[in-house]
Amino acid sequence: MPESDLSYVAWRKAARSNPNGECVEVGFAVEADVVGVRDSKDRGSGMLAVPGSAWSAFLASVRSGALAG
Image (tube, rainbow, N blue to C red; front, side):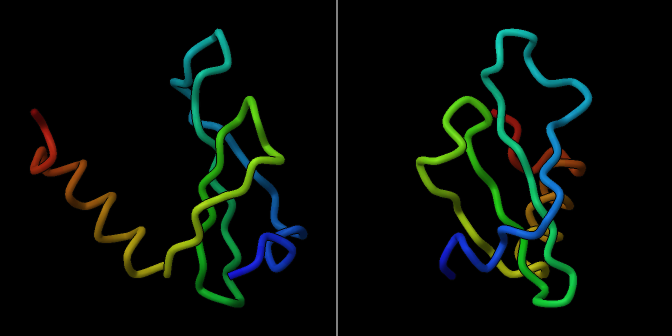
């Protein structure tokens, strides 16, 4: 999905993000069921766009500890 398709979303950083700016931002396009993820310190370098269902599955895996190293 082209980045322009998410140009209208409100991007946000995690409340626990690193104070030196090394974190990601997430933007939700509810109408399109798409979640965008981008580098907060280089916003113009592009983004990863995933279906909302994939984002939900990723969050569930994180919360369950399935991705812990």
